Image (cartoon, rainbow over all chains, first blue to last red; front, side, top):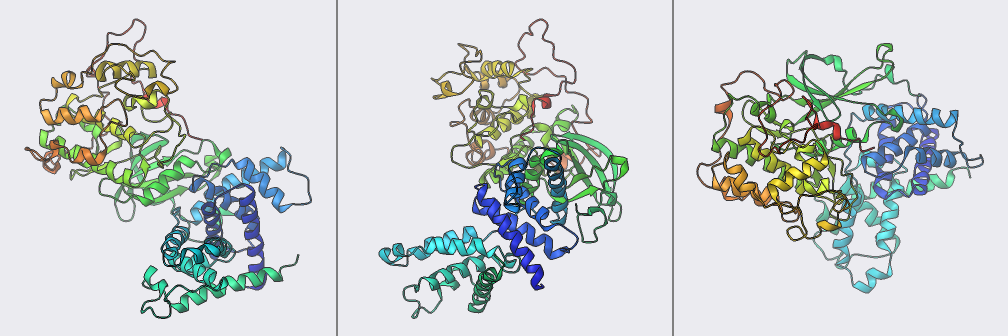
Length: 231
Length: 368
């Protein structure tokens, strides 16, 4: 993917996440919206479609898929406000109705592009299980001193700014963000050096250190890409 | 806007791939057709997704049905093959239509029951109920409520396999406190807790429907054909006894309990009333447990499957032999209306005449 293209996608992802936060969405609908968006642009050309319309529609579709009760009206207002920070809030009028119609008909279009596959296997649930299992390995005081769960969760949410969710297994992504979180806090799983089996092999038989490092590198690259964005 | 019509990307297939053979039903949110794949000649059922309220985009009920069917893969659940659509053209005022394409099943239970020539032996009824409860067990363990149990939504293939169909009202449920809409389930199969306004309901609502369907295997027509919600509750009380806190603790807290008129002093007569049709003691006992007023006391699908009814002679017997005698599809939609009187039709109040062809479906309301 060219640099300019990935910059556009990064901006749209920020817009999806920011709008999602303002709408008080949970992590899963935001992850679903991001996955839909990435899937769509994996197959379709950025010059043909307005990425912000696709982004807003991904959000509205994700809310329906994940049973998050949000009105289309609110999605439009919040997305508009996120995109046009310096303009006055959207009034009910021709522009509002035009936006609403675009999103409503774009939903079916996106569904067709997804070939109606609306079930997503996100890394979140695996991460929860892994965190629970790992927490039992650590000394309670040591585990409580570091916000491992929060850090790993934040890495996971941020990872959607890139399209790595399309290229790697959910289990592997969950292991990688956990690996990165432990690394950041300078923690080592007890007896890691002496164990014949590494902790990640316990969680997933087919994960290799190489895969983990590829994923973590991608996540780190994404953060440096953010620093290069014009402010 | 995206130029959706010229896209080359492999979007979902076009409806032109199939030729329609006949209309076979009216689902909760659209018509159902029998159709044939022009190339492979496979016969399928196509269900049209109504896009009435385009203001909110793609209907969430249809999305739920699609999502649920993608997750549920079981022998006793209808199999979704693919989704296709009709292109938007000037002829349909630029409105695109979507079809869900299912594996074709030859009969539905309502159609079979309305044909007096089709006779089920006790062993065959056991097989029907066993497959039905097995389907319910599977969807409930996947945390899904069907919310539209009725004989017309129970499909049966000519090989005798039963499939739960029409997940148009289905949704996921959780064990925490919920506020779902209670305007679900066709009136005649609607359990008392929904009629009394309960919004935090669970799998037990589908088991009430299973009880109604089970009784129907013998009575051949729906056992409680109410005209209104009030009337339905009256019929339920006449069969299952008065709805009072003594038999159903907590019922007084339901929203409509004090607002609706409930017959007093009725005794529970499930076994007595059905005895004229159902001779088998085990069947009567299971029916009694399925038609329990209090949803917390209603038998669940797991316990129902372990009931002696299924484990004493005659054991459940496959339907393929019995069904092989019929080479014509039987669907409720195509059958003449079932006219046999329901078992506890009360003397009708003057002026309250059930309109011919009355469709209890009209009590539905879109969830969004």
